[in-house]
Structure formats: structure tokens, C-alpha cells
Image (cartoon, rainbow, N blue to C red; front, side, top):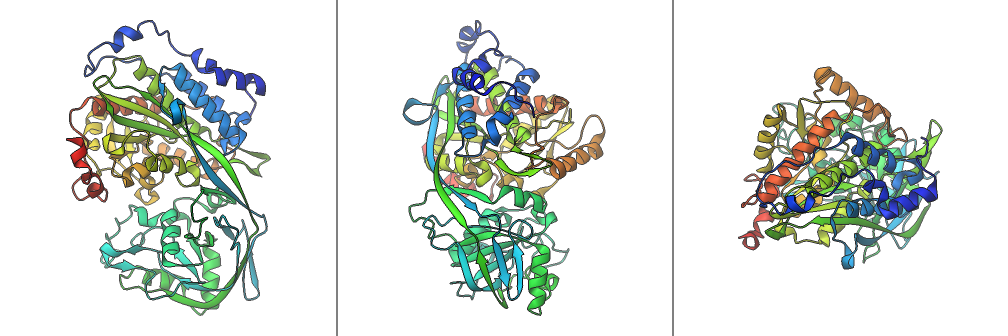
Length: 566
């Protein structure tokens, strides 16, 4: 990709906020419109295609070096976002009156030739296995003769009378676990069918949960058996997204974590099971049985990965548009500014630019901010957040939830923008986690007014609701929504939309090929952003609070703080 501007000139423009200001509309009418009645739903400026493109192609420029946490590119991206928010008229809401919420991370990097050896066979880092350690004290970057134990789906759900770790002393052992939930492959009539949401992946199916559950059980290591369909992505995504991993600076230096975390290709697992006289597919089916218990493989593994650790600084960027009558109540929208940085080249390109993932989300958030700042102020405040380290496990949004700039019990709703549509106008929007909260009914009405439809997630097995920055808010009880790309295109229908989605994930997702292309068609994105903005305004002006659907997994957490919202 060609650079848009010389490095020093770009830095100066970003720091001054001028790169955004030159594209902003005149502010002459802003004062009078802000004085309008807070609850009045007046006209706001349209979401603008040219401005959207400017932000995307700038933030995805090679000069930002893929925006990996703790790098110059990360610093550049956060400086850009702060300058943009200032130019648009937001107020800083970070630490000590600044735009930034600062925190420290540990960056762990594995050597390129780590090994996983069983008997006389060796599998190698990258090709067969991806392993990492987040032990900050460096105490265990290898394991010797560690027994292998198959732990089903790596789920401990006591409310479902399910425990894949039961009956084993896990000290010194490596847990091999399947990706996704126990009923992903369940056939009709199987006992487990529907217990974990059917094809809709729940939190139990996500890799961060499995690492956490294995560590709590006391395992020395945990390796997830990767399969494309239940993971919802190919091995290339696993390989390109790891090798370097970030984590919070933990008070216990990571002693509560498993020493080794990672993934193995399905073929490796099949061979390991065969060597133990076990049938992989038969045990995979058995793991869908509620009474399943761990199965030893009667083999040990020796793992050797060289890991270097360094402490790096990163930051969220937080701005606010103060509410007119209830400024202590907030509606939050966020998008992550980080991507994967500079990594192994693919087709000669080593910069993972992250144009759609997620310069597009940041651009969309800035456009919503621009237009809201030029209209009447809603009753509640609107908080805009640019999250750090999303690709490393939602670390930036998680940090905010644990160190909120505005009280979570007074946060009415949280929205995420991640990977805007770029293949043209759509007849719909899709919603991971559809049906979880009262936000759904409002969005359905907004889309109907647009002449479009509200569509539940067509690929619930992807577990998208649990994979972006609204999720830490949901876990903390805040009603959350992830407005996502509709699949049905106006030109070409659902077939064309599905083909475009497949091409994206096969050829561009988490690869250097995620670059800005002038041929991108953001007609669908403009409609999606307009709908999201309408819902945000509705929530911001409402006298009531959004609610989780009765019986939802997050309902009880929210109810615990009901008294503070009366």
C-alpha cells in the first residue's frame, strides 16, 4: 500500500487534529442546535462517505504499521483518535482530564521453532501447533513428560451439571479440548442437543473461556484442537493471530494461568489419539454426553517454546458528548483501534493494515460522533471509546469495565462497531446475540422505517456476540448490542453476500491483504451507521432503561444494581 503522507508530516497533522478538521463541516449553526430541547429528535447531518473513507485509508496506511499494542503505530492511532475527537467537539474523558486511559501490558513473543514432542514424533510451532505462555515470571516456558488428557470441550458448567475436568488431578498435565460447545455437532435426539444453544456458540465455546477453565482446574497446559467449522475460521487465522500475545500485568505474575496455552491442528490430535489406541471421532461424540469424564491418552508430551517478555504501555481513547439533562447517565459506543502489527509476510507483505478490522469501525464511530455533535444534545451523555488490544482478548474494553470512567450501573447500553460492510447496500442488518435484550425491538422498528429487516445471526456458530468489545460490558450486566453486516445485498441477494463474506474471511481476514481499496462500496455501512445512531439517540433520550430478556445469562448481574437506576 502506498503511504498517504510522509511520516513527519502525517504525525504533525494528526497531533494537531487538522487531518480531521479539514473535512469537518462548518460549526456555525452548532450552538443554536445544541440549545434545542434535549428530547427533540431533530435532523442530524448525514453520515458521510468521503469522511468515512478518509479515516479508513489513513488509519490503515502502512505508516501506522498495523497498530499493534505498545508500538509506534499504536501511539499514532491513539493520537489520531484523540485529535479527531477534539476536532469534532467532544470533551476528554480519560485519566486526569486527558483523552487517554493508560494501562500496562505484558507482550509475550515465542521463538519461531517451538516444538511439541511425543515419543519419537515432533510437531512444530506454526505448521502444526501454536503455543504461547503468559507466565510473566518466566518460570515455565517448557514442560517435560507432561501427561496428555482429553477433556472433551473443556467446559465446567455446574448449572447444567456438566464438568469436563471432573475426577482428575490436573497438576502437571496437559488438557486437550475441543473448540466450540458440546452440542455444536449434536444430532436431533441427542441428550445434549440444545443444552448449550445448539449451533449458536455460547461463551463456553470460546477459546478464552477454555484457557481460563483449564487453568482453574489446575492444568499445566491446555491445547485446543482446531477444526475450521466449529472454530468459524481456518488455521491461518490461528497462526497469524498468535506467536505474539499480550496480557494484563497481573499481580500474581500469571501464576493462576496454565503454563502453556495454544492450539493444535485436528490431524495432530487424530494421530495422538491413534497412538494411544483411541478413536478421535468416537471420543468426540462421547464428549457430547452429560456424564463424560476426562480420558487419559497414556502418552506424555515435551514442550519447548522460547518466550521473551517485555512490558509495554498502551491506552484507550475516551471522549464524551455531555447530556443535556441527565449527564451522569450514559450510552457508550466503542471500536478497537489495534490490529496485528508487523508479522510473517504473506505474498511479500508483512504489514497487517487492518482496514476493515478495524479502521472501519473507528471511522464509523467518528462519523456518528461528528453528526451527533452538530445536533441537539440528548438527555444522557454519549461516550465514545477507542479500545486498545481487542485482538488480544478484548483487553482494552475489559480494562475499562474494571476501571470505568463512567459508572457501569448508569451506563444504559453499550454498542460495538467492528468491521463495517464494504460490498454495497444491504436489505438487512444481522445481530449476533439477537433476542438478548429490549434493544432488539427498537432496532427492528428503526430498520423497518429504513425499508430493511432485522435478521438474527445467520452464523450463530461463530459466537460473534462473545468476540468483540461490547462483551465485557455484557458480562458486567450492561445491555449490549453488536450491529453487524447484513448478508443480503441489494445487488445479488444473499448468494452474492455470502460469497463476499467467504472471500473476505478466506483472503483478507487477519492477513496483510486487509487493506483499503477505493473500490469498496460503503452504501450498506452508511445505512447501518444511521440505524445505529438512531437507536443510540432513542436510548439516550428515553426515560426508561434497556433490559435484558427475562432469563438471559446476564439478567441477574444487571438486576443487582437496579436500585441505583431508580
